[in-house]
Image (cartoon, rainbow, N blue to C red; front, side):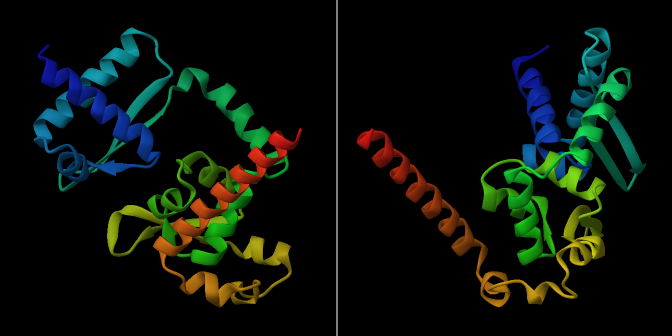
Length: 205
C-alpha cells in the first residue's frame, strides 16, 4: 500500500472518531480533499483491519446513493461492557464536564457539537450522548444541514430546574446574545486566571 493511501486511511479514521456522529461521504471528501472512491476504499481497509485484528471498533454505513453516511462505533463483542458504562453514566451524579456542556446548551441552544467543542476546547461527543440518554437535552437533525445535529434543553431539564423557559435563567439575555468568539475568549481568560491562582497558591506553600 502506498504511503499516501496509508495516510488517508488514518486521516479518515481520525475524522470519524473525532466526529462521534454520522458524517457524510461528501463531507469526508471535502475535508480530506480526496475522491469519494479513495475515501470508500480507506473505510473498507479500516473495516478489514478491525475484523482481522479483533479491534473494538467497527464502521457502519447508512443512507442512499445520494446521501451516504458513515459512523465509527464500538464492536458488538464489547456491547455488554459499553452498556455497563452507560448505566454508570445514567445512574451517577453529573460530572463537572457534563455540567459545563449542560450549561452551554441551556444558554446557547440551538447549537451543534462543533460549537460546543469550540467553547470547551475538547471533544464533547460522549458527554452529549450521556445527557441525551438521561433525557436532559434533546438532539434533532438540523433542517438546514441534513448531516448535522442540533442540541437543546429538554422539557425534563426545565421541569427539574423548576422553570418554564430558559429565558428565566440568570443573565440569560447577555450570555445567549454574546458572540461565540466572546464566550471562547471568556473561557480562556477564566482558565488563565485559575492557573495563575494555582501558581500563587503553590508558591505560598
